[in-house]
Figure (cartoon, one colour):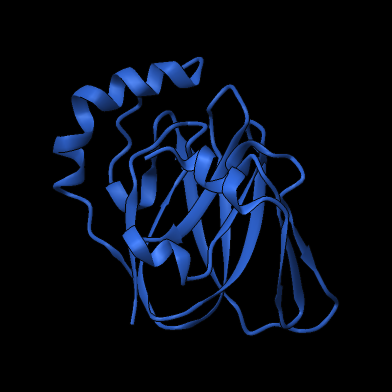
Length: 169
């Protein structure tokens, strides 16, 4: 699936969530314009911490494979030979419906990363989604979203990582 084309189809769209305005722009995960804007209002959002290293998010895989990468093409080659085995050990992230902050850190990848969370399969059209980029090495960014019940995937097409499952029920 070509996520960049999916995001381009979205064009510019504002999503309003109480206390938050998200501006989703064409270009998705790599677009520096896609950032969450926080208000001064208190929030009951739960924080989900995610750490990116070369070609993977650590938390869903429960193991740092210490892949060495200098560009996204490296991950495409690494994932072609390893993602099948790795995905067998990934457990879906289980959440309840509600407001969340996904706190994403680029631990040691030497290029900009991002975050892309969307509904799985045909649910992409009906479930909330969020994307953003510009996470440089050592930097952390937050992405706020209110999740509805359903099955989601999250990844970073810039790293690129496998699609990791997220179930909201």
